Length: 378
View: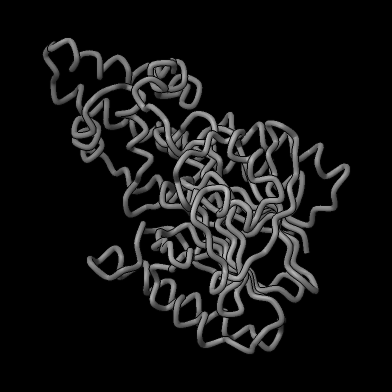
């Protein structure tokens, strides 16, 4: 099974660019499916280049935020801009204005979630597509609301106060119903679910909350849903010989040796519990901070720390068969690199070149191309 894995795209332009590239890619490379591992929304998270270190103020100064807002939300942008400008000008803002703003923000949220549905539809028309919920799509935090203060250069309190006057939580319910309608041979929703695709269990840890570490009700709910999904995985063991587990939820990176430690205690327990079971086991972790892909083996699991690349639109290609192979795909320069696999227990490095040498045949080229300086794990 060969699958494209995309995450943390954060803008319509990125997804459109990747989609057009994939249409050409499948003419020369056999692809079985596409996995979009969350965080389609989140315009406020866009970054230049390969997206790790950058001057935020300088980059934001280059953006025409008003035009971005009008483009992504043509139905609500004018009204939102009009009323927010009243606040900025110090004009009298009435309760009626506040309610109008709240309703316009709800329309904005619907437009943004509808854009996710639109992209999932377009991807599924090209190749069978799976989707896992990212934290930016979560109904617990509604991070989509962070886009507006970013695009309007206004207070987040202003946006929050106005939207609380409305029944804004219906927006996610509408989104969920539209996801259900998409379900079929060409599209499957994986958020908090484990499904059998031929002989492979595909399971998505739903990004409802940024953490599974039980510190509040949201993280406790996140962990409960993860445990439920793991129970579903176990029930399907007798029908399968492979498992791919997709995760957009935060964990902890350690440096000596370099590993990613899932935040979920249930996931960590599963990794230990199923030693000696299944032929292939893969854990895919998506996070926009990584400038490079990490591909290593630990505790019988192949770990892929998914390379988002943000505005460079990097994505990965995973090949799971008798062995597991991982590729770094850079559509901006039209280059596919097969990664070397390393054992995290015995591999060591002391500088960026040493770290990159574990996965990349050409570490010097990667350092120059992605402007990597001093970060030991990238």
